[in-house]
Image 1 (cartoon, helix red, strand yellow):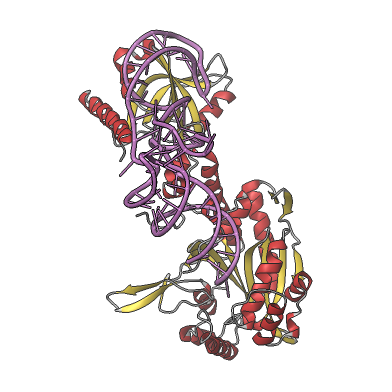
Image 2 (cartoon, rainbow, N blue to C red):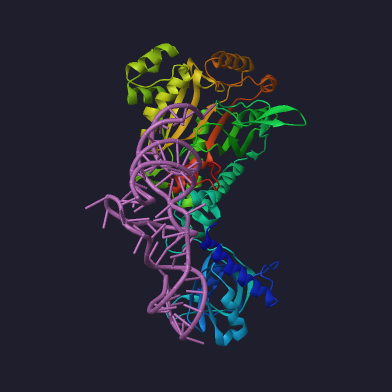
Length: 488
RNA sequence: GGGCCGCUAGCUCAACAGGUAGAGCAGCUGACUCUUAAUCAGCCGGUUCUGGGUUCGAGUCCCAGGCGGCUCACCA
């Protein structure tokens, strides 16, 4: 380390030794404050300025010293408060201990609250104890921590220095609680299914591979929750969900972290119309719980998550946005030719489904601001969804979009085991040219053969939902420890 | 993986056209019993991301590399 930081640390180590020399433990076991800061202030205001004796604890975040009187600001999880420490009240020995107390240390303090001349509620400290000595200087109080890389690598500093960042993650937690509450209220049962799997199915994505030594077998980190949750529907969990981490070995971007949190839920005796209703209600519920409103502001526009969301046929949406009716092009070759003709860059290996997906993600998705469901996807994009009644080319599937971002994906689940097997086979045939095709999961197929009731299923990216609710443009701002390359 | 941009004190940022690397905060010493971005006086503090090169002289120009941001590609 550089000499400057070394010197600061040396000074603090010297303080630490002086504290020990006084017979004080700088790292005591516990401290039980009578109040948290916010409650203490609220009680004081309520009682018209009368204060009982109380104790508070927190990290020192700033300090103003005027000789025989000092003010410290401390902060706990609920807020910050000013402490007043006076030489005449504490006595010389106690007051001198302040010499060895730095910004960043934790202390516990007891006394009574009063209001200063300028009106700030302040604890008049009659005694205080050291709770933890800090050996490194905190980021600067006024500008906070701005270095983006440092904010991600040392998130704890970001949380200390930037209140907004902390608020984002508190909101994330509340959103997740709200989702659980919403689903539990409706009779859904939360479960946990394996992260390590012999085959990574349920989505089209490149998995991470690992190895189990005792079994001497390669295992994959899951890329979706789908196939196990549907096994549970077979097993009689009529309403089931899991909110869990999935892993995709693909590019990293402002919308993609290699591991992210996915909610999937399945409701027996339902179809994708019911799932649309569920998505509308869930978004509105969560927004009300964490924001107190269903309205968001994004890029200066107001977005209202309250239902009803717009419903547009995918085919219509693609046709209006880029002038291609993909039903005029029944195979990959003709569609690709059309796209090339329009000047689009097209990977030569992509199947028809992936080409349509490209049309969707490049021309349609970015333009959708208000909550919208695109419905009825071509069957070749969706091997796990049930066909539309009366039109074999499409499946009953929708994706939900808000602010140019995909936030939900749902369908009427395919529960015909023979057709499911056929769909898997077709995917595997395409696999020779397309690495990320769905793999036939024999165990899953066997489960389906026992019979799965008609079921609606839904997947939602929690990180993206939090991005919406917190108006963040990057997924790294809503993931506490985003994936970064190791230094050196 | 491609393109563009960035990396200077613990933190936030300066440094013209290539000419002794600066400031604020934090820290240290002193003064100060209602301050709150406390104030006042003084002081300390640098591998300018790394390694090469050009030059009398490089934070600055060139080459290579590292890490990050944005973007494109990739991506259920």
